[in-house]
Length: 281
Image (cartoon, rainbow, N blue to C red; front, side, top):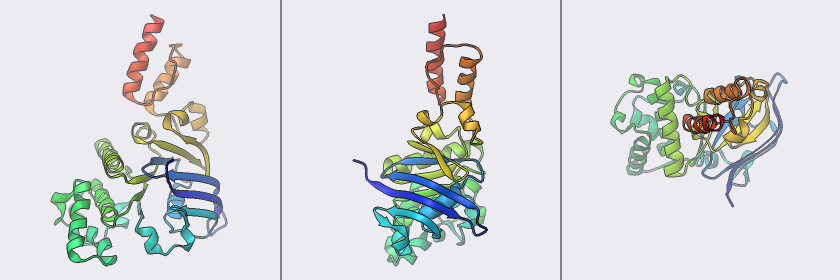
């Protein structure tokens, strides 16, 4: 049985002005899972990540980290396991160089300098930033800054990464490289990953589990192929199908092609189209 690393059972959380941000929310994240929280802007994704990371406390309900109530844990006990990567890396980076920024966490944890060096070198290697160790933060690209943010958390030994829109602000190739990096950390190093996103086209290629958040409530959850079923349902929560799924859906319902399922990737769509044309021909 898979171990649950984070368990969220929220009755409600209100913003200071009284607006209900999250309500009736149940979410479990298993060890080694790569999960996505998909929602339009204003759906509550960032707030949920901050609650999971212990940054927001004034909620009704319970959040457990490895079975322990987050509200009763010392911050350092949370940060030894969980790290949050903000949407804008400039909100997170502050040191003069890449090495010094990644080294801040381990030093603050009291690690000896030799261990700090070892941790930082391993973390930078994990995110393909070793050659930039001595480079100034201000000389990095936006995507490189995001990688350094991740390295800083890995250097602290974080086993769980929470990422707020990790592909935001990146060009298409940068998006793909970021998702490949996260997939590698998840697959090869066993890092549990939860990412908030509104990028529906990247989700089915990489994620194990998908949770759709709308107006502060989780409205659907499961494997991507179970969540992406029809455009009308997604439109109701201000989302759309991945482009390839939208094309197949229209070919099936408007052109009458005999597709048996809704593919989410180009490879799946190619196979489905070949089979559909064989059936029709």
